[in-house]
Amino acid sequence: MRHPGSLPGALLVVPLVLASGTPLEAQQRRDPDAEARLETLKGEAAKEVDARATLVQRVVDQIFSFGELGFQEVETSSYLVGLLRSEGFTVDTAVAGIPTAWVARWGQGRPVIALGSDIDGIPQASQVPGVACRMPLVQGAPGHGEGHNSGQAVNLAAAFAVKRIMEREKLPGTIVLWPGVAEEQIAGKPFLVRAGVFREVDVVLFSHVGTELSTSWGLTSGSGLVSVLYRFGGTAAHAAGRPWQGRSALDAVELMDIGWNFRREHLPLKQRSHSVIVDGGDQPNVVPQTASVWYYLRELDYQGIKALWAVADSVAEGAALMTGTTLLPTRVLGAAWPRHYNRPVAEALAANITRVGMPVWTPDDQPPVELNREILERYRPAMRAYYYDAKRHRTYLEQLGVTYPALPDSGGACRVSLRTPRTGAR
Ligand SMILES: [Zn+2]
Image (tube, rainbow, N blue to C red; front, side):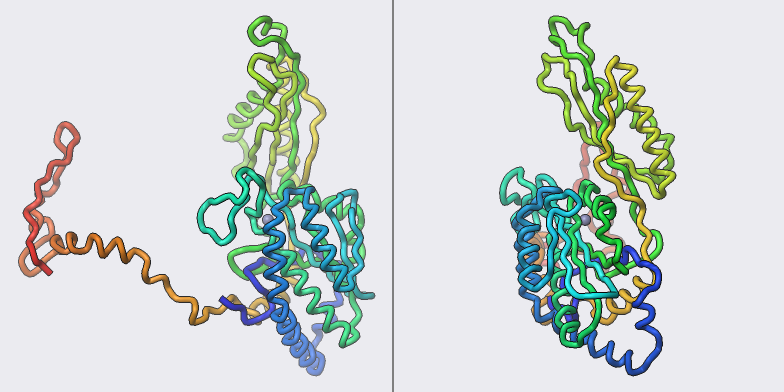
């Protein structure tokens, strides 16, 4: 496939934030000369992006090959920072206390346009690229199971292309690039917000791989969540010799899970929640003195998330009470509130998406008409003998000699003797 315009690969573009006094809107006021110029520049931007097809391919492949998990995107970030610096961007590293977070800037003044995309992979997703079945490259290693190797490639190409045009046209404005660190843990972005990365930013354009080019505004599909680690403290004892002296933290974890799954029936339908046991003790003959379970508690609005979280806390307290263990201070590992996207930006993006279009099929892209050929070549001669011949028989059942209904015998066996197929039939 090839792409006719500026955005390589399928991706979702979401307008995250728009501050007041939008310069974009001002630019869009009807002025025929300005509009004609904008059209020309957009066409040039598309060409500039197309000219970077190799860069996009290399970044996608490079980050895929690193396959790093959240907060450990060391190679990924150092590679991207290197590319950005060599293009003249100023890059701050270790932003917001996160070693793998960075913020790259180029240009001056308004508008300040920030481009973001996630960079982390998921556990045990190592995969040989280009193979449409499960085939780990390194058994057990992490990998890019959700396509987070692609978004930064798109952002870099867009930023470099626009920078080239801004330099030539002497356009004011600042381009900011940033990574979604540890997105799978919902654990990076709030810290970037708190560190003020977006304070002077007019608009954030965020891209994520998807099955089509699309954008949206308002509340989006998907939930918000808190990610909470529940840890229990018990008392160790010999599990065979003196079990009565022990208090099992693992029992508390299991009872919390059981309690939650009973309670689930009586939770609002729109909640989603799931958990994994992170620490289940050391070995069977030692009553576990520590155990922990990690919950994602999802709902569609702030109040819903808080309410769900409160229920989970009460279930955890109940589990501790039942087992004589202690619920240790819970740890919030991440949070994401439901997303609300900006309409004018989404509409502007949608217009550009329409302009760029989806990938266009080329003569190289042909339907795989050879599929199933071998199977049919093998079976067709035998099947042909059973083709229905409407000239000779009123119904297919009559032709086959099947009396309807043909039921299994008392032993459950299917004994239907078919009339001998005609030979040489066509
Ligand atoms: Zn993702």
